[in-house]
Amino acid sequence: MSNSGVFRTFRDPIHQFVDVNRLEAELVDTRPFQRLRHIRQLALTCYVYPDAEHRRFSHSLGVMQFGTRIFDTLVAKGLAQRLAWSTDATARNRQLVRLACLLHDLGHPPFSHAGEEGSLFRPDVTHEHYSHKLILQGDLAQVLADPTLNPFAITPQEVVEVLQGTAGGILHEIVDGDFDADKMDYLRRDSWHAGVDYGRFDHVRLVESLIFRLSDEGPPVLAVEEGGMHAAEAMVTARYWMFTQVYFHDVRRAYDWHLADSIRDILAAATGEPFYPDEVESYLGWDDNTVFTALRQSKDQMKADRLLRRKHWKVCAQTTAQPDRDALVRFMQRASTATDATGSAYADYALQHRLKVTYSRDFQVRLEAGGGFQPLCVVSPLVRSLEPIAQARLYAAPEVSHDAAKLMGPEFAVAKEEAA
Image 1 (cartoon, rainbow, N blue to C red):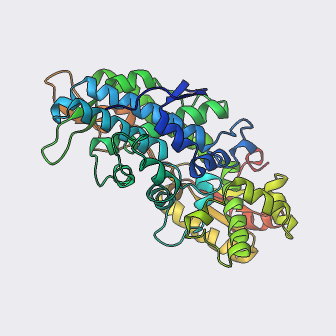
Image 2: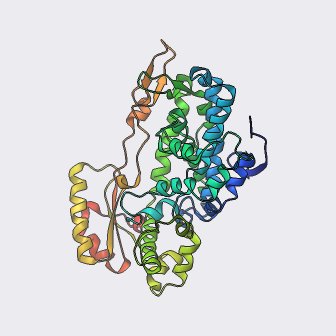
Image 3: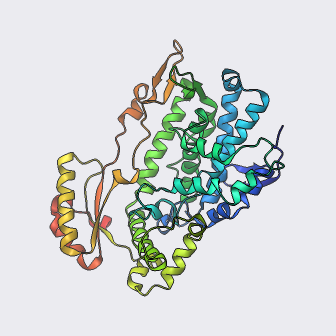
């Protein structure tokens, strides 16, 4: 039983070619997946790095490519035999992993992560919530229900369970773990499109070095051979530098805030409340184009121009990259005062925006001497030395920037070239 024949091929700058079978092609052609052509991967990072215009569409295909390579590597190292998978079961799980990777980002709002900040989702709702709903109902569920397209009879619920981690074990780790297909692709892809080298690492060596580790408490989990430890270190540092230099760039973060602020107003005007609609068909109507159209028609042109004409607020005060706790407390207290006093300022705190290092004590390295396992953060002095960035910044409108900076005091002053 198989559906592995190449039905369509996509050109891709990271993988050169991404092949899809007929089932995958039909899923790609659905409305929910095609919507990803209109969702920027990095929001308005293109205002800082002009070519960072890529979309969730190509990233999703790339994650499927990386996920397949990881799966095939583990099977070649005996995963199927260890779990007593038959030939058909192995092929089925391979297809299941590919589908989970392909569909994992369906629910992203306009401008990806920037479009979900500022409580634009209802409480306890995330973009994953919409991803799962889109898989379980509508066009995608209909495609998966067709036995001529889906000879393995993989159900939408199985795909969702792999994404949620409620089933699938190591299959879930391939999609969402410390060294998963998602991170491998977005680091390489974001770096390539931004025109920087920060996100580069030896992904070929890393994938080839991945192994599975048997666990007494559950299914096998991902690990890496000692010979691939340097490639793993390189991925950790790549993620670190991409966060510090790209994802948490001060201008990029300004636009993330302006986007969330404007989308809240647009949602309230369109739906009567500042949240994305619950109903998935309505949610599918929200993409980058919807927001840009509303901005161009906005009556508050000054606010719209922050995004349409690059008139963003700028940093008027900030901490060091790794402030001590007392300094951070002082900053946040003064920032609250400055925000209340000026009415046109806001504080941005790095740790609230996923600026962290992959530092899990669960990801293990198999040592050549003795064959035992140790956490990567224990055997790698490089990984152990990396500390999460905890920088805080205060942004303000030009007309109140001087007053806000004065309230923050010289301790948190910004150099003139940084404030430009």
